[in-house]
Amino acid sequence: MKIGLVVPGGVDRSGRYRVIPCLLWLIERFARQHEVHVVALYQEPTPSRYELHGATVHNIGIGATRWRALRRIVDENRAASFDVLHAFWAMPPGVIAACAGWLLRCPVVLHLGGGELIAMADIGYGGRRTLRGRTQVRVAFMGAERVTAASTIMVERAASFGIEAEHIPLGVDLRSWPVLEPRQRTGPARLLHVGSLNRVKDQRTLLEAVALLAAAHVEFQMDIVGEDTLSGEMQGLARSLDIHQYITFHGFLPHSRLRDFFDAAHLLVVSSRHEAGPLVFLEAAIAGVPTVGTAVGHVRDFAPGAAVAVPIGDAGELARQIADLLGDEDRRVNLARAAQQRAVREDADWTARRFEEIYRELTDAR
Image (cartoon, rainbow, N blue to C red; front, side, top):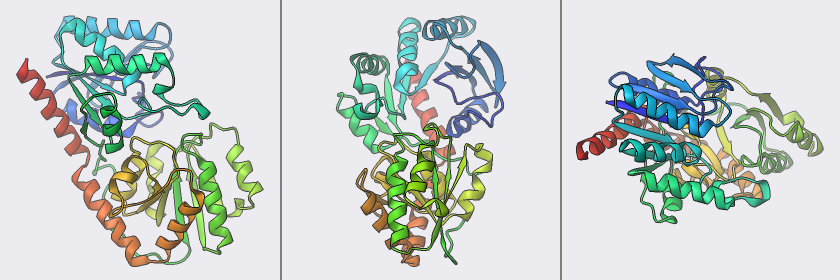
């Protein structure tokens, strides 16, 4: 098959920086058997073309990006017709894929994995905040013959648009991220939080929970890894809460350097107001680390048997559940084991196979 993937970015030619690992894992698997072209909208500011993991990346660049992306797909289709187009996220990749699908009479798959179906006016986030955003989501849905979603909460939100979506998480590559057996803790707890410092990830709630843990005399240290988009605000909050001695902010690190943090951790903490995933939840599960987090994405899907979910924005409950789990090693390890078993079943190979089955179903129907 000739497969066209439309993505916002995450496919840097380095394969290390500015990448979305789960996309790279899929591209590598698809390219083993198929001709794969990746249309990356904003990876680099100027147009370019390069090879990555056996696929051809067409970087569109800044300036009339959507029109030029559509033209690039049409031009590539002239060389040899696409069998399927697959958009990751509704806006703008899903809109571009929908338009290309109509022009080329090519089936389109849309994967929901971001904030396209939510609206958070107080922080200016979400595709449903504006009429333009809602219209783009509608166009993406109208142009897709199949819709998939990273978590059941995204499936439910698609249903609010009258769209039936299939739950397909973007799984982990077990070769590059090997399974590690859950283990008993010795010494103070090592807590881990991985994610860009921003309003959606809601590190304010995280730090307020950390302050409550410290006040309760829980012995712990926390590593926070992620790009700081808030210009030091969270570091300042940690100082004002007098918890800076418990926390190390590591800033952005390439994915290849994250595994050591997971191997050393006893608990992953998620504080987000919204997640379609997140991937770090699945990576923690593969590394034998359980998660306590807000009831978003995979956290909600795995709870209660394989994760602990708390109400969004509730620092008190987040702290209580962290303390309870750290106080019960058997429960913590059993929770980690249950999460790992499910994440291993739904790994990157499973994800790629399921997408390929959908592609075959669509092409056979044509």
